[in-house]
Length: 160
Image 1 (tube, rainbow, N blue to C red):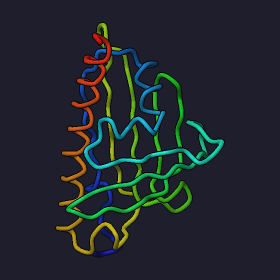
Image 2: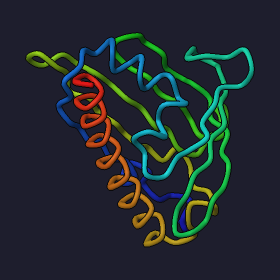
Image 3: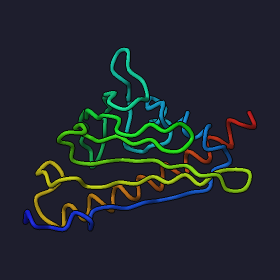
């Protein structure tokens, strides 16, 4: 794929209303080990020994797509309790994708937003525009599923 490809084409944001405060949502999402409860593609996520949800912290996780599994290393790049949490797959210095979450109050709950942004082209993501477009659409569907399952999990566990 061309190095002059506009990376802005490879972003998305999905949002959902969730029956929880921004502070509660931040606590859930920034505990990266919890993400596998809601994400259809991620599991076994854990911060490095002695780390937690703070800028610069690293964590590992297993990912699945199309029958394949692999491990990624990610670094926290934003940690604003009650407002935002973000990490870069591959690390802040030379990562390939940024995932971010933001939370804002709305009514008795919050709007949770999950965004995905391609930072640089990498053959691991695809070698043609069609492959990277397909990846973006796959990740957008995954983010939608994650948000829906997060909202349902909160509702179920609140009443339990």
